[in-house]
Length: 307
Image (cartoon, rainbow, N blue to C red; front, side, top):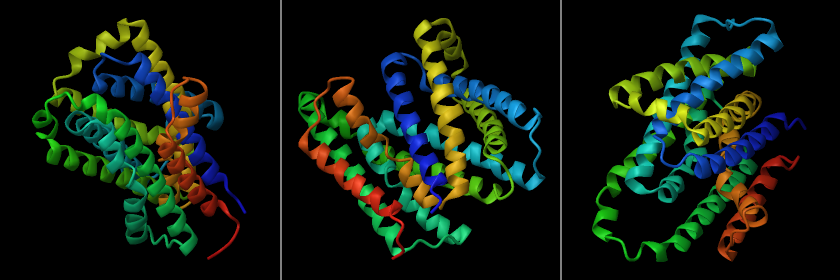
């Protein structure tokens, strides 16, 4: 069986995991909106160069329908999806937001079947459900680890924006999933580099609108002037966009959106061995059990059997 799409999705998740760790270590103190915008600018420059080298042209060759769908994909996934996710982080906290966000393969399965006619087998459904439950278990275990640190904080302040944070997390999930649906619908005869290039055009336009609306333009120069900021952008562009985003386009094209979304959601699980072996951080037994459950779901997805 051909598992190019699944392999690309796993590589995208690994790239995003490492990029996220670099951003966490080096990107503190900078506006997330500025970081996201500069990453998208660097990303479109890098992907355009790759397209020029591979395809021999700088301007993407695509139909008007493909341009529209991919630009909408970039607007929904990069601008609104990422924007609502940042808002969810601020109102709900990163771990709780990611707990909701990790359910995006379920949304992808529903929307994929409705709009793309992608019918999943029983094996796919079981694999996705097991993997999503495992990811949620890992995140919940991590939340429990941090609970003791939050006991002394103002509980009223922590729960004040709970409903708003949940809403933002759900909207972020829908933004990412609908972005993937739009990408899938446009990529039948389009290569991943060209698709990524057009998608980044939409993402950059959306980010410029958001920076203007939120009055965040003054935060951009601070990232460029700082060595840590430049390192963060470099890692995000190379790992997050040139590798991660291009691989995600290949994954979306080569396999079902729900399967690709699930495999690309493995970041909370992939970070565990990195934390344990490279960062020397403690990994709890609950996190290990959640990771094993996720691994079992992934293996079920990749088994060359039909159920």
